[in-house]
Length: 179
Image (cartoon, rainbow, N blue to C red; front, side, top):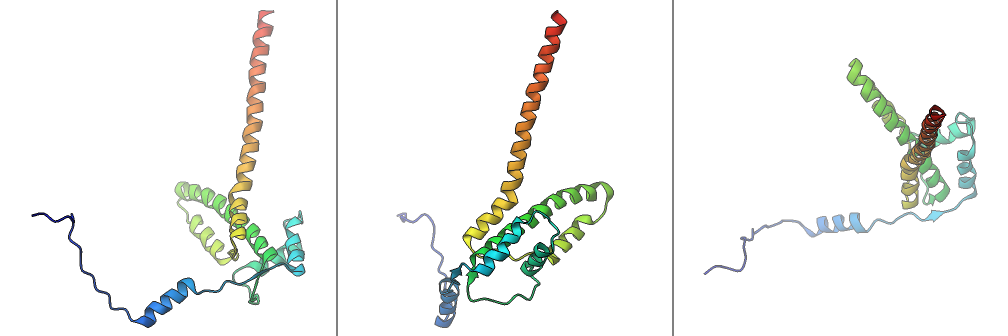
């Protein structure tokens, strides 16, 4: 007579002691998250984003502070403005790297160079710290993809207007040919 189970169950035995299980559970579920705080210094540093000059001393100093290799002091909290600042600069850096990667990949194929590898090395050496909060991650993604896509949409809309003008010119020429 056939059994009701279509497949035979494998008998697996695991030899794991209690301390290993405890350490895995503590690592996975027992991590305490740092509290988030708003600080005036963080707000002041965040305003460097508003500086229109890309090479201002204050903005460059903040970017150096936010780089992974910097000797920034470890805090027992997450500064919300600093996290948003990290997100903005990190998203812009990733966008620039993506554009550079596209350009150097084409050059590498045509000219048989290794620019893409050198670009990746420079990017990894100068990589900024990642944001720690969900809000920071969202800002990073919006900076990386949202700003360029909105620019593309604006350019596309202007091209549509231009095509409308070209059609108008063709119709105008036909009208003038009839006269």
